[in-house]
Image 1 (cartoon, rainbow, N blue to C red):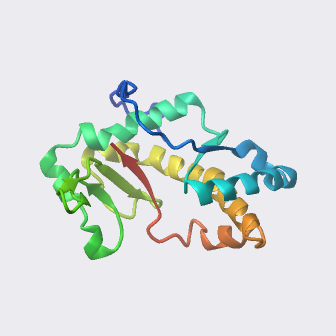
Image 2 (cartoon, rainbow, N blue to C red):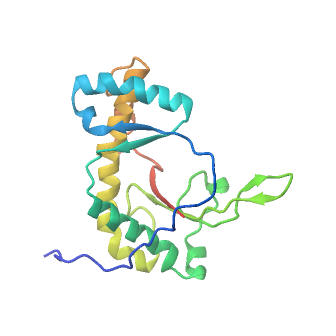
Length: 196
């Protein structure tokens, strides 16, 4: 019988909002609750198309996750960064350039952002294949795999698929064209990526 309690993990405390005067991309907001009807999709696809052409990114809202669920995922997402020792992280680091995909850890300062001045990136990430059991994970993360699987599936069906339908409409393709190419059973190295 499955457990009724969730494994415990620390609370993720987000960093304070920056006080720096930075240039921010004004991302379009896509309300995915409107993607459930043909009329809603007809309204959304030009917005999505224009946003992707302008910035390449959108901010999706009303995707079906509650604030409590988002908080829990942020808590879990911090586990591979905060609770895995550096030596164990090395065990789960993949050389993406050699193997052709990102899985496991990517340490900070791996990529050169500016070769002239030798500026290195400051992003650490942990990528989990959509099929969460496909690869091994650090011991401390394993109790959370059922929740990560549910999160990955939710993103696939409730965020990715509606967005793919909108992209197909913007390309004047049948709505299911891209969804059929991103069937969960056919995905190769699609992943959930936690970044810090």
